[in-house]
Amino acid sequence: MVYLYRKVGTSINLAAACTDGTKYYGTYSSGSAFVVPEDLTVSEIKVVDGKLTMGNYETGAVVPANTGVMVCSSTSGAHSVTLTSEAGSSVFGDANMLRPSGSGITAEAMASADAGYKYYRLTMHNNETLGFYWGAADGAAFALAANKAYLAVPTGSAARLAGFGMTGGEATGIEAVAGEKGNGETYNLLGQRVTASQAKGIVIRNGKKRVVK
Image 1 (cartoon, rainbow, N blue to C red):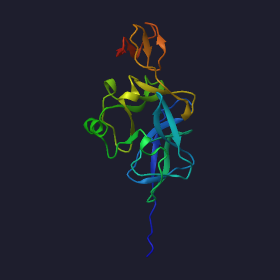
Image 2 (cartoon, rainbow, N blue to C red):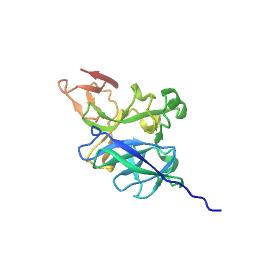
Image 3 (tube, rainbow, N blue to C red):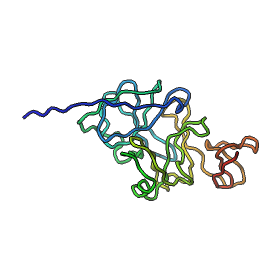
Image 4 (cartoon, rainbow, N blue to C red):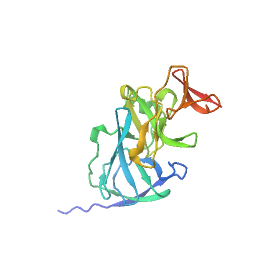
C-alpha cells in the first residue's frame, strides 16, 4: 500500500520593528514539522557559560513538530514555509532551551512546564536593543501567543541575568547581558555602567531591577 503525504503551506511573519539593524527576527513553533526555506535562518538556542549558543538548520532541513526556534531574514514581513509529515531532526535535541507556545500558553502553564527556570521573550528593549529579555519581573513566567517560542533557562545557569542582547548583526553575535550588580552603581540591560543622566528605562541598581522614567 502506498501512502501519500500532503504538504501544506503556511507563513512566518517577521515584524519590521524586531531588528538588530541588519536582519529581522522572530520566534516560531508549529504543531507540524516544516521545511527550512532559502530566505530564512532557523536556529535552536542553548545557554553555555552565560552566553547563548546558536545551532542553525540547513536550508531544506526539516524542523520537527513542536520545536521552538528563532528565525531571521534580511527582509521583514511574511515568509512562506512548507509544513510536512516528515519527522525531521532537532539540532540540539533536549538541550534546546527554546520552548514552543503551542496554541498559546498562560503564565501558569509556562511555570508548570519548566519549574525552577527563568523565562525570556524575544523583544526590543527600550525599542532599541534586540534580544531575549525577561518577559515578567525577575524572570517569572508570562503569557505568550500561539506559534511562538520562549527561552527557558535553568535558574542556576541564568544566574541573575535580566537578558541576552544581540550584537553584530549575526546570530552568533548574541552575548549575555551583565548580571545584576550590588556595588551601588547603575547598569543597563547590556551590562554597561551608566551615569544618573544616562539611566533611562529598565536598569540594574544595587542588585535590583528598576524602571527609570
